[in-house]
Length: 132
Image (cartoon, rainbow, N blue to C red; front, side):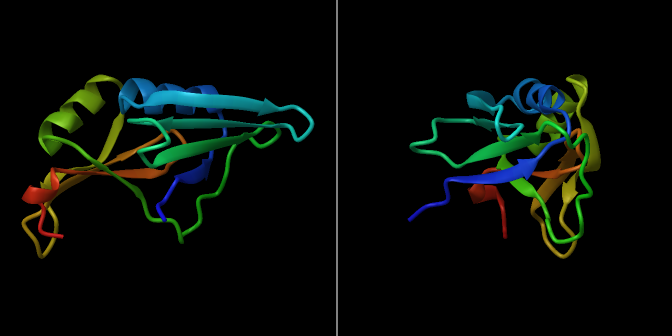
């Protein structure tokens, strides 16, 4: 067994695709409109779906925004260097909401960015550098 994807609902699909592809550097893997259901599914990720876990962005055409609630935490992405990744994300228009630095009670360096719908994305260095 393996995790295939995580689905999040987005209010503006084009805005979200721009963030995930241009700011975070993912690729649009596939996209399909479902006119009868009035929704679109777009899958983005850093590698193909056969070997990688990806994000499914679900856009319900008649819903411009969602309340995130308090149950969802974040999506985590491994990066080579958390500090440099934040600089690059900020330079591409991304919003860093927790500056890079050690996690409380740990030496693991992390940061958080926020997508256009308010979802949090955690940035972590390579596994060998983490103490989680």
